[in-house]
Length: 173
Image 1 (cartoon, one colour):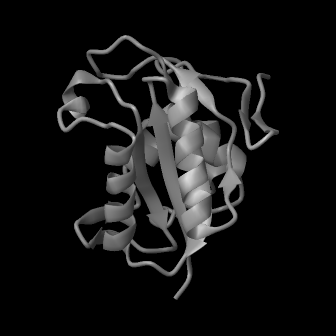
Image 2 (cartoon, one colour):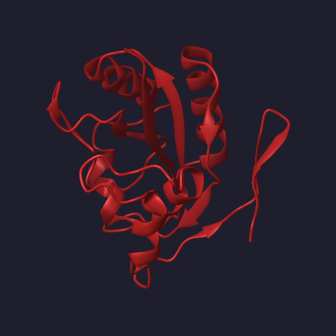
């Protein structure tokens, strides 16, 4: 069964290079992508002070959740992600499964939908822009409604200019 897959992607080490490589690999493996704008934000709760670039990508896939997760982790490693990067805050590439269709609960060791959707501006804002009318699989609220109710005063972020494959996919307000 084909499902709509939502990924959160971030990088704060040479982010343009790693995000472009990620998008290239995703499109090669899964086909056409829906891509949010790219947002820059300070690191949240991490030691590294370097700003992150974050976006959300959507695509269709029939792959099992465990296979999707394994593929994303392999791509992170291929882009030079270190095993201890979660604590240091330095990420060449961070890919998180946010949602896989309407699946909820612990599936293949992945909790869906990912709690970061409602916790972090750098996940919710690009998701709300990309799929404003789509609904969160647990609470049924649209991503636009969740963003409208979100207090982002402690989590500043701003869209940046970003190009991929000769096209502008992101631009400042």
